[in-house]
Amino acid sequence: MEQTIIVLGGGPAGLSAAIAARSRDKRVLVIGNPIESSALAKAERVDNYPGLPGLTGMELLEKMQTHAKNMGAEFITGRVIAAMSWGDSYALTVGSEVYQCGALVLTPGVVQTAKYPGEEKLLGRGVSYCATCDGMLYRGRDVVVVGRTEDAPAEANFLQSIGCKVTYIATKKPESLNESIGYLPLGKLEVTGEDRVDGIVLNGEKYPCDGVFILRKAVAPADLLMGLELENGAIRVDRSMTTNLPGVFAAGDCTGRPYQVAKAVGEGLTAGECAVEYLDSKNQ
Ligand SMILES: Cc1cc2nc3c(=O)[nH]c(=O)nc-3n(C[C@H](O)[C@H](O)[C@H](O)COP(=O)(O)OP(=O)(O)OC[C@H]3O[C@@H](n4cnc5c(N)ncnc54)[C@H](O)[C@@H]3O)c2cc1C
Image (cartoon, rainbow, N blue to C red; front, side, top):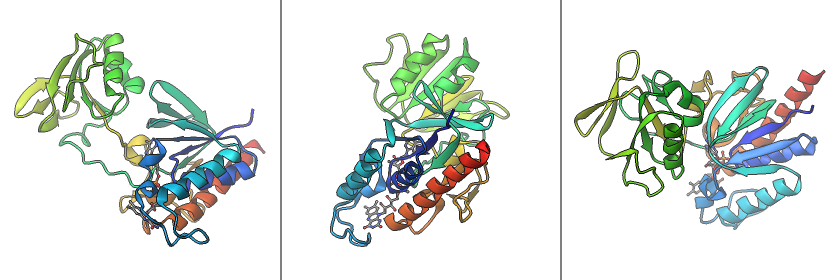
């Protein structure tokens, strides 16, 4: 069966990659947050994109998205919370759904995430960003959910449904949170533990727990996909936009400066074409 190319992110780089791959008749799935989340959507006026001066960022984005749709790219609106290699393919988790592909093009833009103390050190050892992926590991155990996304209450309810003892932490108690889940207001937070998470300290008070699910709007690429190499904070790529992982390409702001649409689009084109070549070489 022909394998799909998944493009993570629906900004200029992702849309360009999708158009390039569709031009070679590959099945392309673009998975991205709503279009308004692209950096370009914030530009009042773009005057340096060749051939189309004077458009707002949103107008330019909508033109690119319509183009990709007309070329036959498929779209899913959602946040990818985890990606992992799966044999010679990759699996991406979006909410409770998992999507599989033969080649992956990362175009998440610049992802800014300030981390809590202890979070980085204990990632994968009690700290998780994905309830669907890791929830079963914590059945019957105490977990904390730090809810900073709209779907975080549903994730907390899910964790409770599979037998986790959940405490929910957020700036405001959400109405959709199960009544029986304990709630604490978010404040100064630290994740504690030596080799594994043993609790959190919230506003100076210690709460023991075995797992901490931190659910944010953005997940940094290296946290999304284990083993992905960075260089000066950007995804390391070569001239064919290939990362250090086989079948994984990257383009746009996530590969470093200059943060410009024309650069994102050019890199997206290369990444899309090279993802096609990669799939074709696997099928030979
Ligand atoms: C105010 C402003 C004005 C600008 N003006 C100009 C200008 O005039 N000219 C110019 O050339 N450039 C301009 N830029 C820069 C330009 O917008 C960026 O260089 C360009 O948008 C980069 O494209 P990209 O596809 O790499 O990233 P983005 O456009 O940021 O798109 C990335 C997309 O991926 C999504 N995403 C990230 N992580 C995930 C995930 N885990 N799951 C699902 N989706 C995810 C994001 O939400 C976003 O929608 C401006 C930027 C800003 C902020």
